Amino acid sequence: MVRSEHYEALTEALGERHVRLRTAPAAYRRAHEL
Image (cartoon, rainbow, N blue to C red; front, side):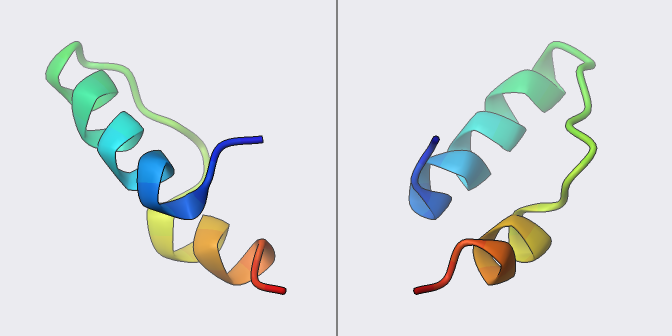
């Protein structure tokens, strides 16, 4: 599992390569809050 802080950076990096993740960073953060 990727930490929510890294997920946002991953989303941006993949976006530069025209790859979209299904889950938005905000939704990922909400789903993984403890």
